[in-house]
Length: 148
Image: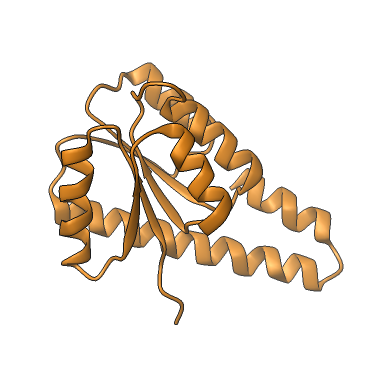
């Protein structure tokens, strides 16, 4: 089975480095990005399965990263993990297609469960889209990924 790729994005370097190590201890390999621009660049190159994304960052914020990622790679599952979010932020990111919205702090084992569930969802969407493509419906496959 393919190794899951997780991208952690947060401008709080000590937080994201610690989170990265704690996930690795639970057999979740990951990469880190310290700002939105770096996250978009890494998504373009490595194309993660799941992205854990902070909202409030200098430069390109999490909402814009989500918007760009969902537009280019609709099958990447994005989990928002923020310490400064509002109900309005949650509504906006869910409308844009975020898989989940979580508030810091969250127990690491709860986050691992959410990451694995997001990865499972990505695999399900990918298989369903492949079925549409095999049935001669490539546009339906694209729309299916965008809408889910």
